[in-house]
Amino acid sequence: MLRDITIGQYYPTGSVMHRMDPRVKLFGTLVFLISVFVYRGIVGLAVVTLFLAGVIGISRVPFRYMIRGLRAILVLMLITALFNLFLTPGEVLFSFWKLKITEEGLICAVRMAIRLTYLILGTSLMTLTTTPNQLTDGLEKSLGPLRRLRVPVHEISMIMSIALRFIPILTEETDKIMKAQMARGASFDDGNIIKKAKSLIPLLVPLFISAFRRANDLAMAMEARCYHGGEGRTKMKPLRYQGIDRAAYTVLVLYLLLLIALRVLL
Amino acid sequence: MSIILDHVNYIYGQGSAYEAYALKDISLEIKDGQFIGIIGHTGSGKSTLIQHLNGLLRATSGSIYYNGEDIYDDGYDMRTLRSKVGLVFQYPEHQLFETTILADVCFGPMNQGLDKNAAELRAFEALHSAGIPEELFDQSPFDLSGGQKRRVAVAGVLAMKPEILILDEPTAGLDPKGRDEILDRLAKLHAEKHITVVLVSHSMEDVAKYVERIIVMNQGSVMYDDSPKNVFRYYRELEQVGLAAPQVTYLMHELREKGYAVSTDVTTVAEAKQEILQAMQIGLPKEL
Ligand SMILES: Nc1ncnc2c1ncn2[C@@H]1O[C@H](COP(=O)(O)OP(=O)(O)O)[C@@H](O)[C@H]1O
Ligand SMILES: [Mg+2]
Image (cartoon, rainbow over all chains, first blue to last red; front, side, top):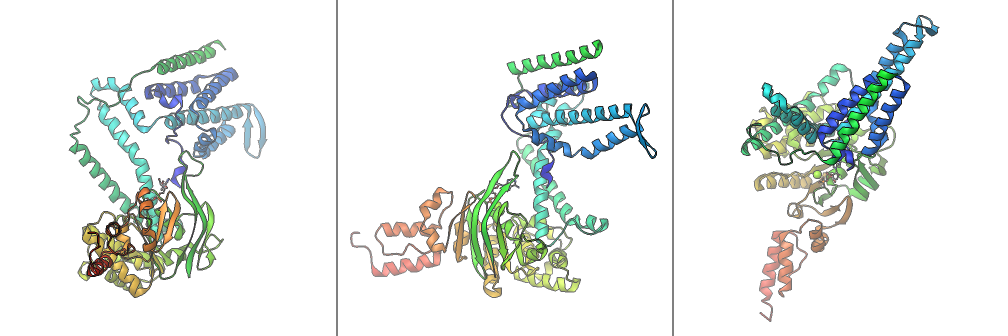
């Protein structure tokens, strides 16, 4: 039941996108996010859309699967769209009762919906094509220079990768404990709110105990292998740029320049 | 009175990148009063199969009948089904949550709608059959030994008075003493209270001594479904799917090959001893 959330999930297809250096994808996501906010006009929108469609095509992640991730934020999108639609002052198109729809409101609502959709698609494409481990590796390397400012970059990325690693484990554990308690006649979805909250105790207590047990085991295992933080630590698979990564950087920079040029010129 | 599975299929994560075909066309009947072992290599679909028996997982296709009623019918009461078909998960001690052992075992009966007194009565009885001494009842379940915790968890399901008791690898991670204790308790329950027991395991050794019927699972399908004696005849085929017949089966086959007049159908050490003694009395083979 918790498996429907596609944001933050990895979807292996073995495409070029999947094999790219995570730093490129991080940079690419950043570029795309910026582009979603700087584009102007129908031509700009077309460029952004083409770019997104192209990248999704290259990743070979089924479009239907990506769309599923959008369902989670549908409510948020609707609310934003409604607010924009009714509360933007300007030329009135229709009005009924006390509500007015203005031309500016309509444009604003559509633009906002497109932006939100693209934002979600763009960021979920990154997590769909990059394993959590690669992602934190990429972050650690990209943020490396911050170490000079005494930011514990390695520790932060280690915490992140452990946390990410534990999400599926704990999801599975939750599922298992839930089923085990249901086999003992527990039900998690009826009664009023107080009853519902109380029915979570048989789920949460074992879940916390298991999370602590796992954390303890992990800490023990890390210490047994002499883990002592980032100082002097080397990687088994150090990140190295390949030809494809350089090509991707070039494309990204060109893409951004094109959009800025369009914005300035049009 | 029985559970019937009719062409049951199950696919995990249908429509996602991680689709896994876990059960393929399973048809079988679990009759009242049987003591059944379900055996299979890790990942063969044992746990998936038993979660269908009390409706925790819903078959992708196929039907399941409990006492003649289709459990997927609209309005079929799943909660009653779950109290009739008691399911003890793997590592059941991980589901303990109450402050005292007694309270934890009461959780099931209370969910069935019993009042506190009736539930405690059930809990007492269940803890006794699980072999937990009475002076521990008011202690925290988290202070017990591994084997005791597991028996408390089994009592938690027993207290619901199920007609069928299913246990998923109840001996996993226990020492030999804890393992024998739990299996002997189950055999006693089956003999005295006549409840149907389904024991899931990946060890033939565990199961051979107790069960009257073995269902061998392999890659989501039923490979054999027969008495232990008949299943162990396929000991070479079992090896190929990562299972092994009990050691006595190998011993008897080797003795037979050496020319001793022993039956190769024995499944337990005690039976093997009888056979060997008998063969010794008849005498050594001529050519030796
Ligand atoms: N929650 C799940 N999600 C996806 N696949 C699963 C899940 N649980 C089990 N599987 C897969 O289904 C198959 C059968 O698993 P399971 O029934 O647990 O086997 P067993 O209990 O015999 O070890 C395995 O291939 C396993 O990877
Ligand atoms: Mg299992």
